[in-house]
Image (cartoon, rainbow, N blue to C red; front, side):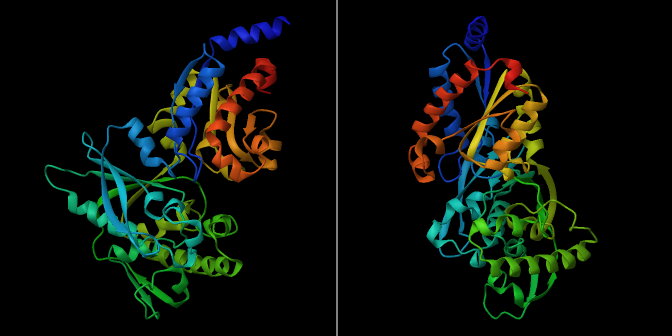
Length: 397
């Protein structure tokens, strides 16, 4: 009884960090963070709460950057990843530094194409090249642009950057007679590459939402292409081309690209590397250092993170995995709020992390998505009840 009273008193003054990722195709991390803050305040009215939405480079990256940097936002119109229509893409400009932020998910992400229209073999990164050209045209003495930071993640493509390579002046030798020779459907006709005469004049930083190889068993195609709609035959074709392109373009750069974990967003960085000066920033560095989440974790008692689907891929340098690993290493009580979690991840982390799923409450993923706001408040209540039943030593084994 005394232990329960002690924990209840502790919860009245506990410090809680709320730092969720976006719930893909449901709500942004900023929206989820606001809902969680309201829900936790309702359940633990005496708690001190810090809200810090995060992004690993995928969906919601630009919105998160707006929370931490003073950005001026504007829209640039480009072709969508299918080339079927023009879409407005937001960019954010930080006047003090001259840095532009954008997210690739706004260019060729799953959120830009309805599920029924997604065609991975006919989708590409050409629009990103057009966007970069239009950003270049904005640069003047009174509008200096010193760097472009691109969040890579949440993509609907697997074109190894052939679209952006072609858009920025790279030459792709191909036996294909159509104007869309750079799309995956026409990869088997490609016979070689010639980089552009001059590189893109503005340096680019890529924030990678996952650390995955360009090719191989654990490469971008074999890991992610199926969930983007690729058939088994598509995967074989994409993987074969990826191996060829990595080898040939690696020789052109005199670099070993096979061992580099730069395969985020369908390997778009492979094409970009031959058009611009590229620096890679891991999601871990961006989240913990650039936006200062490591400091927030150190200053709070409980870390609450989450995303729509929490599974093995979440630990591949994605935001929730980064938060969980850092929080556990710092000895913090750790909670994951999610739509659903894989059995594998529950078995691996279940004794250390409190994992709460909307799926258990609503019974189906569709219902969880439709009623996610209700689910957030319900899971906040479950979190309070679970914390009351566990002592600090029991919670972080």
